[in-house]
Image 1 (spheres, helix red, strand yellow):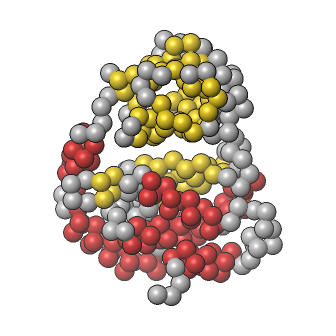
Image 2: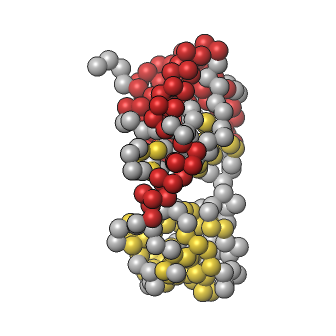
Length: 263
């Protein structure tokens, strides 16, 4: 079947950037970002009654040493990443609200050669692939209209219906620590807890790492993933790296003791 999408993207990136990244194999490569974007797209898909929607906004946070060389190529890289992600989504019959919007941000709390990706659904985003892609853009628009029809309200309704049956209301209640007494509604299927402002749940505890733990909803409960925190994540008195927790069990991050409760 010829070259894979990823191989074609890698070849295009190599052509665009004239070997700049090859000269320094220690740098984060564009193809690595493409791989992680594809993973984020698949992970955050939303299955509605008739369609599978995927995020159309991807914010990639990189260490400044990785961000600088990539940012110097301007919109060329962002357009290629957008095209790659859209083509990858097409393979799986996914529906985007708009052409994918890719953003690169410098953030020195992210380790070198690693990245942190936030995603969003936003039907107001406009992504320009350039005049050379006008025909492709028109095809995208026609396909998108055909798939979604009068989508603005219908999409929100369908996604709400798809999630209503399995989404009970939960919160993360802080029992001890600087944020004791606070209760954070758990409004999504996965979220990050830490001191960094980009986390969905931000704690003031100085012993909590900037990105301390990721908590994801599973059929049998909530899955805790320690993100390499300095002081560790503890469940019922035992340090864990990856563990399922059920509502009512106590977890500790630094000075903070918390529990997931059903509302």
